[in-house]
Figure 1 (cartoon, rainbow, N blue to C red):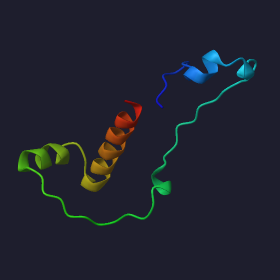
Figure 2 (figure 1 turned 120 degrees about the horizontal axis):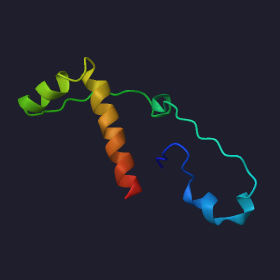
Figure 3 (figure 1 turned 90 degrees about the vertical axis):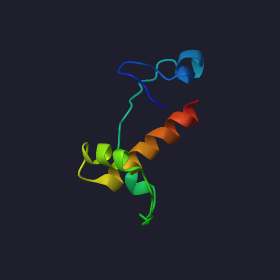
Length: 77
Protein backbone atom coordinates (compact mmCIF):
# COMPACT_ATOMS: atom_id res chain seq x y z
CA UNK A 1 0.00 0.00 0.00
CA UNK A 2 1.36 3.41 -0.90
CA UNK A 3 0.78 6.34 1.45
CA UNK A 4 1.52 10.01 1.10
CA UNK A 5 3.32 11.90 3.88
CA UNK A 6 0.92 12.32 6.81
CA UNK A 7 -1.70 9.96 5.35
CA UNK A 8 -3.06 7.16 7.57
CA UNK A 9 -3.88 3.65 6.36
CA UNK A 10 -7.67 3.10 6.23
CA UNK A 11 -7.70 0.51 9.08
CA UNK A 12 -6.38 3.08 11.53
CA UNK A 13 -9.14 5.50 10.62
CA UNK A 14 -12.01 3.14 11.44
CA UNK A 15 -10.78 0.90 14.25
CA UNK A 16 -11.05 2.18 17.84
CA UNK A 17 -8.59 -0.46 19.03
CA UNK A 18 -5.78 1.61 17.47
CA UNK A 19 -6.79 4.84 19.24
CA UNK A 20 -3.82 6.49 20.95
CA UNK A 21 -1.21 4.52 19.01
CA UNK A 22 1.66 6.24 17.28
CA UNK A 23 2.37 4.89 13.81
CA UNK A 24 5.48 5.04 11.71
CA UNK A 25 6.03 4.08 8.10
CA UNK A 26 9.47 3.14 6.80
CA UNK A 27 10.38 2.90 3.14
CA UNK A 28 12.92 0.16 2.51
CA UNK A 29 14.56 -1.70 -0.33
CA UNK A 30 12.98 -5.16 -0.43
CA UNK A 31 15.08 -6.50 -3.31
CA UNK A 32 17.16 -8.67 -0.97
CA UNK A 33 13.99 -10.55 0.01
CA UNK A 34 12.92 -11.33 -3.57
CA UNK A 35 15.23 -14.30 -3.97
CA UNK A 36 18.24 -15.14 -6.09
CA UNK A 37 18.57 -13.33 -9.41
CA UNK A 38 17.99 -15.48 -12.49
CA UNK A 39 19.18 -14.73 -15.97
CA UNK A 40 16.47 -14.61 -18.65
CA UNK A 41 16.40 -13.66 -22.30
CA UNK A 42 13.74 -11.20 -23.51
CA UNK A 43 12.97 -9.70 -26.89
CA UNK A 44 11.95 -6.03 -26.98
CA UNK A 45 11.40 -3.54 -29.79
CA UNK A 46 14.55 -1.52 -30.53
CA UNK A 47 12.83 1.83 -29.78
CA UNK A 48 11.85 0.57 -26.33
CA UNK A 49 15.42 -0.58 -25.64
CA UNK A 50 16.70 2.82 -26.76
CA UNK A 51 14.29 4.63 -24.42
CA UNK A 52 15.24 2.38 -21.48
CA UNK A 53 18.95 2.88 -22.16
CA UNK A 54 18.43 6.65 -22.26
CA UNK A 55 17.19 6.48 -18.65
CA UNK A 56 19.62 4.05 -17.05
CA UNK A 57 22.95 2.27 -17.29
CA UNK A 58 21.47 -0.81 -15.57
CA UNK A 59 18.85 -2.20 -17.95
CA UNK A 60 18.10 -5.30 -15.82
CA UNK A 61 17.66 -3.30 -12.63
CA UNK A 62 15.43 -0.78 -14.38
CA UNK A 63 13.22 -3.51 -15.85
CA UNK A 64 13.01 -5.30 -12.49
CA UNK A 65 11.97 -2.07 -10.75
CA UNK A 66 9.36 -1.39 -13.45
CA UNK A 67 7.96 -4.92 -13.02
CA UNK A 68 7.78 -4.52 -9.23
CA UNK A 69 5.92 -1.21 -9.59
CA UNK A 70 3.44 -2.67 -12.10
CA UNK A 71 2.73 -5.71 -9.92
CA UNK A 72 2.20 -3.43 -6.90
CA UNK A 73 -0.28 -1.28 -8.88
CA UNK A 74 -2.18 -4.37 -10.01
CA UNK A 75 -2.34 -5.68 -6.44
CA UNK A 76 -3.86 -2.38 -5.28
CA UNK A 77 -6.57 -2.50 -7.96
